[in-house]
Length: 75
Image 1 (spheres, rainbow, N blue to C red):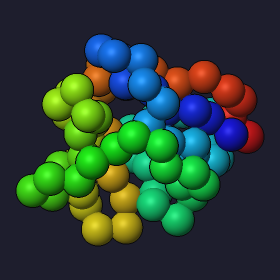
Image 2: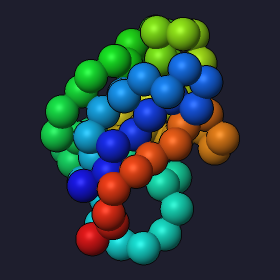
Image 3: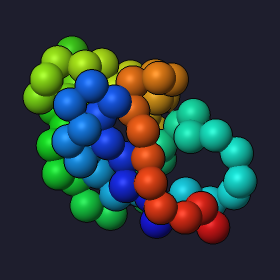
Image 4: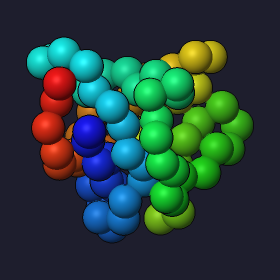
């Protein structure tokens, strides 16, 4: 389970169940377990500090590299 955080303000955004060893490029909405602070505006997901986290692509969020950090273990 990974905890995704904003790279600017360090707020927790959501918990995500990552499967596999690669980078976090996409976050499937069905694997998001708990949502803390994330806002959807105009098909884009943003932190309350207005940092762009990702773009809505239907069943997943295409993450913007360098706009988030994560901690935890990948499965």
